[in-house]
Length: 203
Image 1 (cartoon, rainbow, N blue to C red):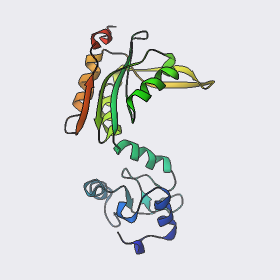
Image 2: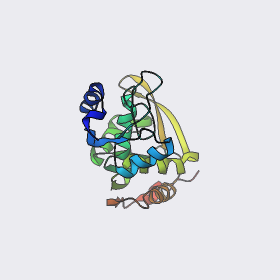
Image 3: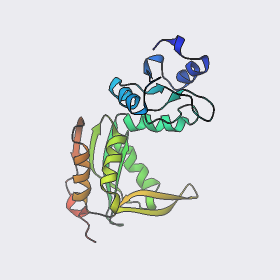
Image 4: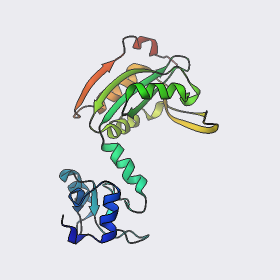
């Protein structure tokens, strides 16, 4: 897309976000369904579309949110489609599992323990795989496991936090959901812990 199609404010916004005009899909005059399919097929990050109702911004995320009004939506999209690791962590003491994504597996394991995520300090990594779209795989796997979701409150940096990404089920069930979500996705560095039988929790 040429710079002449964008305003100075739009060009400045792209620069701040680490993007260029090459990351913009021109969805003007197209239906929502058409540009949503088009931006993904073209591998673009943002869409030039109809002005938002709040401030008249034209740049939108792939899902249709105003990228300029709420940059958090764009940050989420970047994480959703960025390279990283999908993992299953487990706690023997609480008999709970956690499915998530991260950039550094060992650092994530340490953080889960150090921050006592969910009030738990014995988290272990049971399964990991490197994928191109970690957030997408995580979201798909968690939707398959939604009936096992558990929420616990815990203290983090002296404040009460909600841990809402834990699962009350056995490892084999969580693994099956993650593996199903990995179908059609390029996955490398796939590793599974040796003693996962210790995490076959039964209710």
